[in-house]
Length: 118
Length: 112
Image (tube, rainbow over all chains, first blue to last red):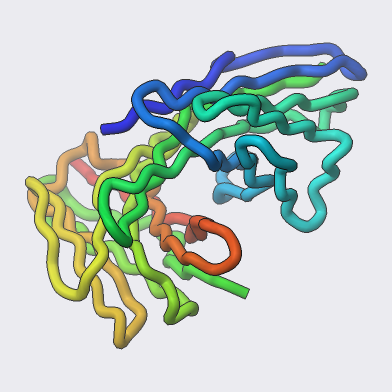
């Protein structure tokens, strides 16, 4: 299957600092990538859709100035959590869709990044 | 509002039994359907994708889709303790954006 690589897998940072998370599609090009957040024992929450060469689309209630998304190439999207606070501690997961055939779509997930803000 | 509904469980089955997981979706425009498995602390892993009505089998897994009833299911035959995880149902819909919508997941416990 297609591989999506996410880095780092875990990070601990001090309150007020910024953290960058990278998401790469390793064997296919991804013009779109999705960023999710998941709190313990809860489902995935879509934060934003990253679009190569254009601005990201944020879901309602997600602060675009706090969660900066850059999709610089067809294989790389980054999420930067700016001025992180303890309530931003969560599991962040990226996903990239691929189109294996006409009318068919599949989405593959990165390994996830566990962010802890202290 | 596009919704994907799943019973949160937990669903408990004995080892060797068939586990049946169900999902309904609200948008009739949904075109692609998926089942993901997520172990605790890990990201989701794609198990099955299904695009047309009927059954699709892959090893011990069978996905079933009924678009008229807006219903998709996953059967796991010969359940193993290693199948214990949360199973997420997802649908893909082409509207203005290519988005995936996830259910809240069903937790499956397979007892040895």
